[in-house]
Amino acid sequence: MPHDMMRSCERKALFLVGKEKVWRWVVAEVAALPSERPPFVRCVHCHGRVRVHKQNGEQGSEDHVEHLSRQDSEHCRGGHHFKGEHRLSLRPVI
Image (cartoon, rainbow, N blue to C red; front, side, top):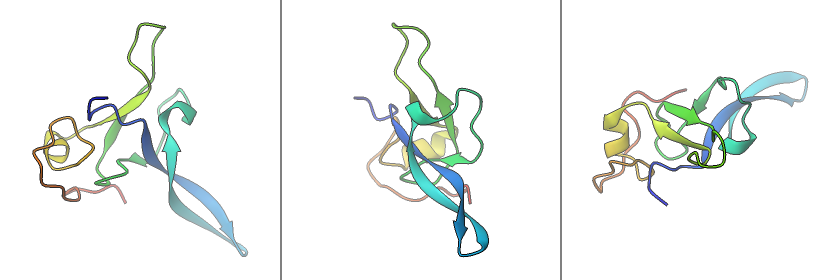
């Protein structure tokens, strides 16, 4: 599997903690995300912005995410262009 075929990401989800609603990041499989553009998703490894790709037809690539920033991809162990030294994104999604 190429590095850019990350099949999971983090998505922001709303939880009820006591009587308070709290947003938290949870790991989600790309296949389980809605088909329309899912809000609040980021890379599991570097917390950088990612683009969601859903499979089109039988011959299309599998559901996956890829980094929007080439710089994030070069410095993330999940990135297609990884150069060997992992670090968090310089512009993380928070």
